[in-house]
Image 1 (cartoon, rainbow, N blue to C red):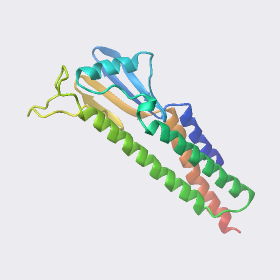
Image 2 (cartoon, rainbow, N blue to C red):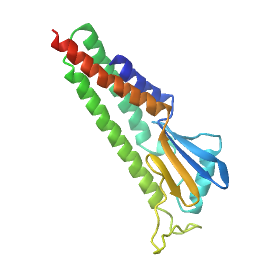
Image 3 (cartoon, one colour):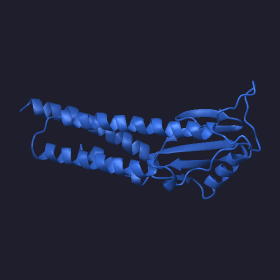
Image 4 (cartoon, helix red, strand yellow):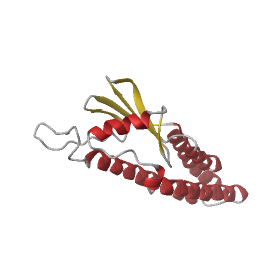
Length: 196
């Protein structure tokens, strides 16, 4: 339990997610890493390049950390979850604790993770849909309706002449492994608890 929840601290050092765009004019690709408290370019000028491209189709610039409340809330949520998980783990180590507490922590973290993913996806949809009507390039479908230009939450998507891939990164893998260990700790704890 303690090891599993502690792995979530990797989210403060490693990106949770990555969005990578490849096009004829960018054969090497341009990419951004999404952290729990920031969005950064993989290479030095990637964010500037993405903002320049987005400007032509009427998108807002990529938000800075102080422009999205999520970049303040997500780190606080992770610290609270890590602290509460470590406390449960220590109690379970010092004296026997009902493993339902471990499962409760796990379920709460899954709910918070899903809420975070939903929020991020909602932001991407808003970001790729609410385009400036006076932009230099108008994105219209064959019927003349405005098109969405948002990357996929996960996987591959073709956006105009860009191939876009969106996948978890190191911080995401830390989180997945951590949650798996917490899940395992529930079953280990249940076996120990029943043997009392």
